[in-house]
Length: 77
Image (cartoon, rainbow, N blue to C red; front, side):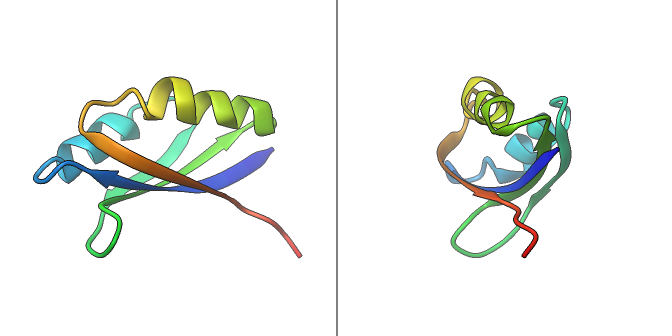
């Protein structure tokens, strides 16, 4: 299982709507709107890196109101 945090920037005033919509996507375990340089932080999981990439590109980035994403895979050192 691969897990990652996805940091999202949105259009002005869209953070709550984006977080709500992303929260319903299978594979997303947490989606919260926050303050700071990013507007939404998402925690997601997938069976492997390829599936995680497909989740981000095909489903999360397709949500209206998103301007940029940064995916940060979780590592266990």
